[in-house]
Image 1 (cartoon, rainbow over the protein chains, first blue to last red):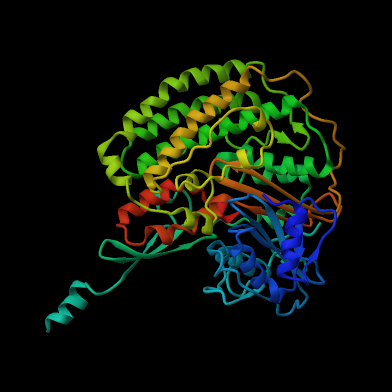
Image 2: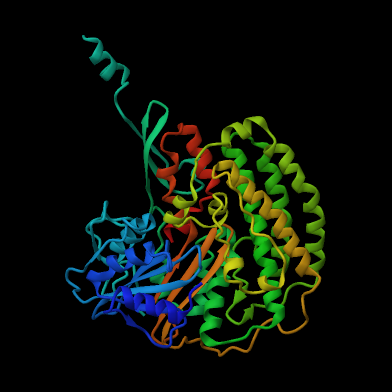
Length: 152
Length: 375
């Protein structure tokens, strides 16, 4: 198991543009959206890190931008990092898919697409999961549903 | 008519046959639809369609306070209701840096394990019934009733008790609590071998499960399979060992691993886990420390701005809760990484090439709870 400093050094070596959040319990890495897949690929294939398990993937709407969040873990060493990327385009948010690296990502990403409307490039089956095609994106903060949600 | 056309059109030998299994199929134990492509009796591929009971729990969380959210979480995986409650409580306590009394930790761990046994019992009886062994259903429900009675006596409800609150418990347990658990352990230690006599050694049962639904360790890790389904593929994924919470660091227990990778291996993991849970209960039940049943909490719970992450081991795998807080009394964003959501999507990979009757056995061995998938 690598400690926080060792992981920071390795990730900085892989991706010099990575930004590390201060004061968080888990190691948080913020990378530009177009560098996400390349970094994840290195993190997965490198023997020192071996992040082979995508624990969780989700998105957060901050009204000014979206953040896509990936929790990656290594099943051999059991170290855990949070990989993040900001998407500033709210009209047409797009990010590359990790489904080629992690089969689990295919379904997490479909859920994020369904609820946030973030499009994942190179995804094999980017269709709505729970909702109909013309429904809005309910987990966006500016989503309004006058019929079913009562504002308090 | 040429022989080719007769084969193609009339007999349908070269045609795929698509059949919808569900949403009301009894063996899915909920509303889930599999779009199964068949070639004769053999499954070619399978597409799960979900969302029939999606309630938008994550969206509801954004409008509710943390004590209210507790009551939403047990509606996800209703068979490990207590463990789901505990995940949110642990997250809130961790964020507010509240140290809960030892008594609370012990009681929570006991409830976790009782819940796990009750869940595995229900899985066992339903799994037997899926494969055509109706007696197992009566055996399992008979023994589960004893656990539900313990729950009812202490918390007033049998299935969704919402007994755990941030900071501790809603109230203290009933004076009979320890006595009844000891009675249950004694009772169930006698009854558990009956389960093996009825199903495990049965030739028909073994033929239906051995070598069916092969899931390699790499597949399990790639798809994020956790819990007994993952451990049946020799994948060590027990959060109770990896990141111990509550009183799991104070008890001795083994992580059950099987190398069979098939339906029978997943079955054996759950059977062994029931024995292991009984041994955890035995270690804890006599040593519950005296003390308060709750820590001192502020009347209105507000998490400091930031991000929080908590993982627990439910009866079906790893439940992770991810919260983004902006300092208000309700979360800005709450995400539940539920075990069944990930466990479901390996179905296509492991059923391809098997007969349609094996599909029932495989989906039974993954122990899917549909509200946990849909949330």
